[in-house]
Image 1 (cartoon, rainbow, N blue to C red):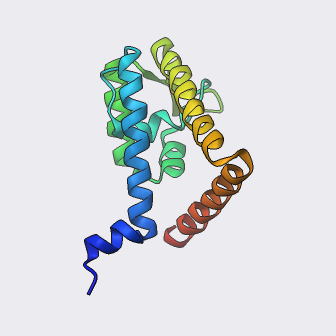
Image 2 (cartoon, rainbow, N blue to C red):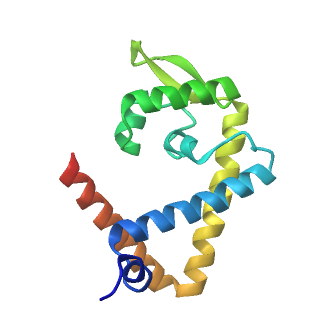
Image 3 (spheres, helix red, strand yellow):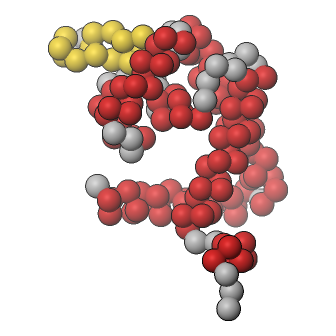
Length: 152
């Protein structure tokens, strides 16, 4: 009989694969960000930073996009505000609402993170071949969307 550990080594399920990919991407991304001077960031901050827009975004939208609870996003925004990456501003479309906007440091991190992620994707596209990588990414997007709809 094959143990669960052996099965996950030879034929990992979707959850195991997704977790391994997430942790490996986060490790590379945040190590390289630290090398570029953003050593105060942690992978948990990705739930905000990955979806931050230069013109700002509402916390409720960050929650929806990341799949994290509003309370978690609020705590992360507090941390990032304290670290100097974001600030809250009134939303011009609705003065009662707030936008989470990147500061100059936040914009610099967004540029660095974008470069690092683009290089990661380029490396895999070259390794697999661009057509296969495009198919892989398209399938992964489809699976992710479908799975997120099932839990929403």
